[in-house]
Length: 414
Ligand code: SF4
Picture 1 (spheres, helix red, strand yellow):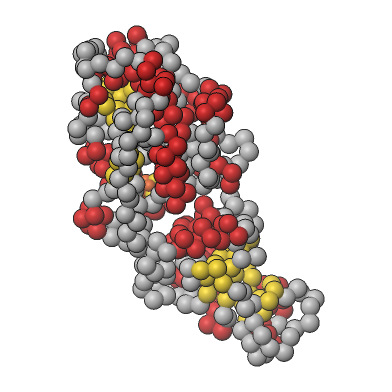
Picture 2: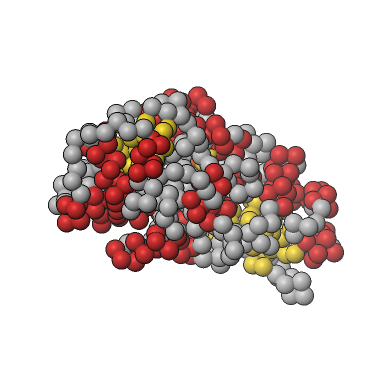
């Protein structure tokens, strides 16, 4: 099982000892809590490092007297929904000032990695090599680990890598020619447009958006998430030069950044704009990079809502990929709506999940790389987790919190 430690995949020097296995005279060993508590003095006197695997159902009080003599405390995640080890980790770091290695073992999945870092873990027994590699990359986003009372250090994300601008020319897709795209010809209010386009196909809605506000005044906003390729494909068939706004919050999965680049090339997108938060705002309001944890609404505001507001300034209308079948606040969205001073077009409002899948199949679109790992909806890394069978596709977003939307669709002030 790969061990991620100090930001890299490491050789585990510790040998796990079964409760009935003979105790080697020396060498680093990990023993169960039961074996340790049966005779702690004998184990602590031997030569070689000692670690204890502590179940999340067991009180830490029994372990605390020995903390400064243990090289490793390994806390267990029996299932990925069972988070009791997070509380144990925080207690060990913050109340008991554990300074040694705090290891996560059991169901250690990549979508919990930043939570684990935040809770004070600094070593991770990962089940799959691919997850271990992703852990290694993620840990490089931190300048230090979070161990607030152990040594006063806090976690800070490193600056995200520079993002290229993609404006290469691409021949127009033949399908584009099905639509006559003229200069702005309409000042119809949103309700009237929504009525006239209520039964229109997504491509017709995008073409109507172009006719309504004109070629230079329309943008599409995409997260390059698990269903984004379908809308981008339809848009590219109408006009691949429509500007695409992507909010690069600084917490985006590496896989999403790679997927963005894949789709740019595959679909011939000619104007993808990766928008980052303002550095000074981050320094002032999220200096430790943990606002997502303490106040996710404020985090979304500075990393998504405000950057989008700026990015949309040159435009009179924008397109997005929400669908009614996603439920919640999306269950009743019209095809066109007024959003502050702008029109907002929802070409997939009427679409079924099957129709989205058909677009993927017919165009042979690549899936988002994280779909295969069980992610049905992908946003920022700290606020995204896998979904279980039977769960809603967006159940993995802001799991365990009341929050269900980032706020970009609620803003109507611009
Ligand atoms: Fe912050 Fe999470 Fe919102 Fe991303 S989704 S901006 S990390 S709170």
